[in-house]
Image (cartoon, rainbow, N blue to C red; front, side, top):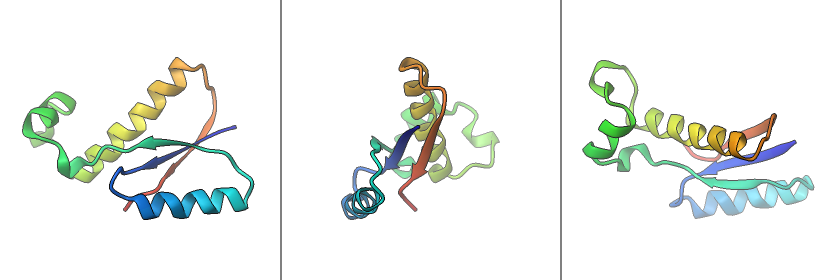
Length: 90
């Protein structure tokens, strides 16, 4: 089973920590750079989520959702039918 770890680019220490944990467990994972929702411009936010003002999502939730969508797209492109997706951010 393919393991993906979503990690924000700024969270270097977190990435190093989970890499160590995965190595101890003898597991391989692919790291995916997460979308930092609070760092999205108004233009990016409108493109990603045109109805943002009408829904009850925080910017962090939008970033998390888009990060997962990016993994799903990768799974489709690479014909991966099952995976474990880990979030490595708070």
